Each structure stands twice: as structure tokens, then as C-alpha cells.
Image 1 (cartoon, rainbow, N blue to C red):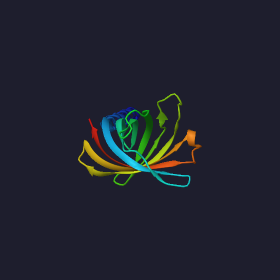
Image 2: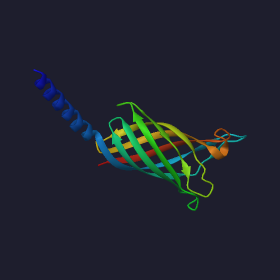
Image 3: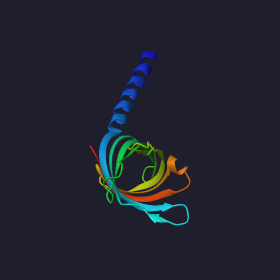
Length: 156
């Protein structure tokens, strides 16, 4: 009887391992963003930007590495955005990332966002996201960019 329990546990663990590996999905994405910088005496529009994203999804958790390009000022420094997303299935997801300005200043910050898949075609998704970024060089509160992104993800 004890041997049967061990075999049953082993089979169940194998099923869990197989099902969890089916959730493990690498992918890529692109999104366009624009927003406003809130802080000081006036509100200013941010430049339109493009984020190229590589991700690895494990069920409701998605680890991502984004690279942000400024489309209006192409010679501006790139921003690396490693982070993670946590999905509430069928509803929204929360995003947290650490934006790192790839320049001599080594400026960094914290990005917090909320998003939603607008169209889900399995491997192909269209999403919208609202992000807020707090940067070290701005004291994390002096000026806060709020950005709306819309993008496309493809999971392999």
C-alpha cells in the first residue's frame, strides 16, 4: 500500500511538471508609448517611444526585459527596463520594472504599471498599459512621467 502511494505521488508530480512546462513560454513584443510628465508648475508631453521586449512567461508570472527607444530624439540614451508582470487571468496585470538609463549618469528608477490584454489570439496578443515612472535623478517625486502604451506580443 505504501508503494502505491509513492507511485501515485510520483505520477502526480510528473503531471504537474509537464503541465507547468506547458505554461513556460518565451516571447517578444513591441509597444508604442506617449504620455505626460507631471510635476513642477506645468505638465509637459513626453516624446513618443518604442519599447522592444523579450519575455519568459511562467503561468501568471512573466519576466521581461525591455529596451526603450525615443523616436522623436533618436540620439537620446536608451533605457533598459528589466521587470516582471503578474496576471490576474481574464482581468488585468500589474507591472514592475527598474528603468536604467544607459548613459554616463547611470540614472535608475522604478516603473509601476497596470495593463490589460485587449485581444488574445493565443500566441498573439494586443495589449494596453498605463505606466508611472519614478527616477532617482528627479528625487523619485519631483517630476513623474505617466505613459500610455499600446503594443503587440507574440509568444512562441
